[in-house]
Image (cartoon, rainbow, N blue to C red):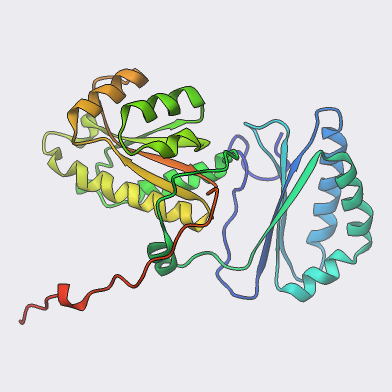
Length: 285
């Protein structure tokens, strides 16, 4: 059941806010089957009452179609002042403590801004060790969606995505591919393939197209607060064939890259400025 949001889409179907003063809070709850209906009813009431408050931009309650014990509150407020007033409201002080009693776990994350394009480009780093925390369907869909907006010759969009969340396949790929230690701790990975039927007879540009696709995915994942590792497959044909065999892929799919995805186990290092004006050449008109 999804109390709010499109059925079957999973969780976290939410737009990030760009304004500095807006506040978004994601609250993730683990709820046992025996109390799930009571929690759902409490949160539905909480959402209805909260939406009527001054300064409430959005208040959504969603349940995860893949993780049956997981629910989420997604709330957006104009600023910290109205959020503070909300926390003093009668419905907050009555409902939220009861929800905390019923839930086996309740975690909250606050966001004030989404990473800008510049921040994502300069801040993204390869992550090789992850916490193992599961990634929700909505986040996965947004990452893949970003990949699908990459440029493509004649709009052929020759990409296909295979989402892997089981340790068996992740560890198997870690044995096959060099430099893939990230797959041993990542909770999931996405295999990006070329569909040669879509690439067409003039499909020689597909490696560039899929490269842009993967980069889009990495930047979107960074904006979602997640770490990634780009693990190359193509053009090393030995690894292409090994991955196809391990995953039982049909002949039209050519594995291009594996993207490990998850919450980083530790902060990544920053790097010094990489812009080098000596490598920029202006050709006079």
